[in-house]
Length: 182
Image (cartoon, rainbow, N blue to C red; front, side, top):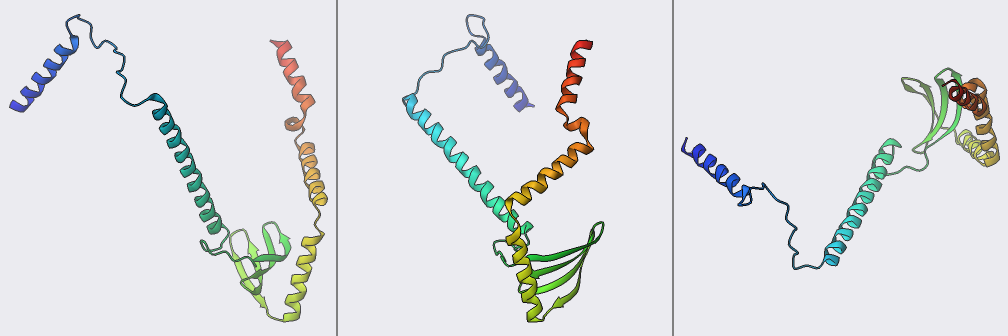
């Protein structure tokens, strides 16, 4: 009880002092300059911004490296570079048989939307070498122009399927009609 009374007395005293003699409550006052020059404080502010930006970039870089290694299946910082799909045979929607070179072994995998099953392992050296050579030839035969042409054809097919979305003329006509109709 006594403590509450003391707190109220201090608060009342502070509000009376804030009113001041002129009767105006909390007038604005210019801040008093400190002993430091303004260029020094500006310089320290800019340096702190640069260091903060560098720290954020470093954290983003290391986070992307860490997550990239985890997502790629490299097991953290350890990266296995010889993993690759040698061949894939589609069997239907979301089903395929893939021949994969992983960890020095050539595996035949059954791949579905929900699971991956080991079918067999190819151990014959001649067959393994043949599969690896075929996969390397396929990679070498892929030209940038071919990939670009396939992507452009895919975009053309998409514009044919959804003409209202991709047609500039129709959008321009609709905008013109909307302006004239208003």
